[in-house]
Image 1 (tube, helix red, strand yellow):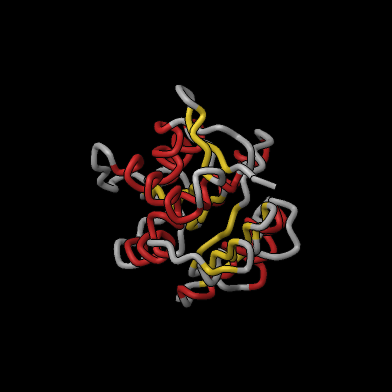
Image 2 (spheres, helix red, strand yellow; image 1 turned 90 degrees about the horizontal axis):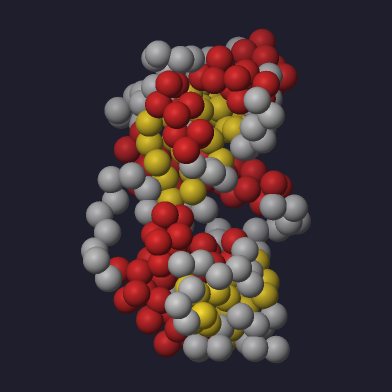
Length: 220
């Protein structure tokens, strides 16, 4: 799941990026509203974390433009403006949630999970496909009532495959979804993680569609 962070504070943003990536999300970081608008026109994001006080184009104006263009990306506002009037205005202009600085990283991640769950139409965070059950909050993977231990990268790869169960994703598509800007990618990283994931879950669960890509399959 790919998130865009639009935040110009160099003391806040790196910690948010690191925390979200550790929670299993892919994150791109931009430092002004114009760059955020451009990124949103080029990529399809699952969530926008938006600071209101951005240079070049304010977060407030960017939000207005997005909603006028009928861009439905979920928006979580991050701002030092904690007055009731500011919060109400942001929500009325199309924001989906509001978090006032300074905030706790754990609360931010919980709100991110809640928003993405809501927009995916799920009542809880757990993802189930047949005998495979994944809880992204606790990073627990159960297969036929047996817990499967995955590394951080293996878990992120599994979550990408589970975003669209049954959809076949190429290596390039997996890389695009897994890695944010600035993350170093070794030449065979995806292939290695796929091999390990198939070994742990079984080849019948992570299916190789020859010449096309990979998908989650339900043996049942």
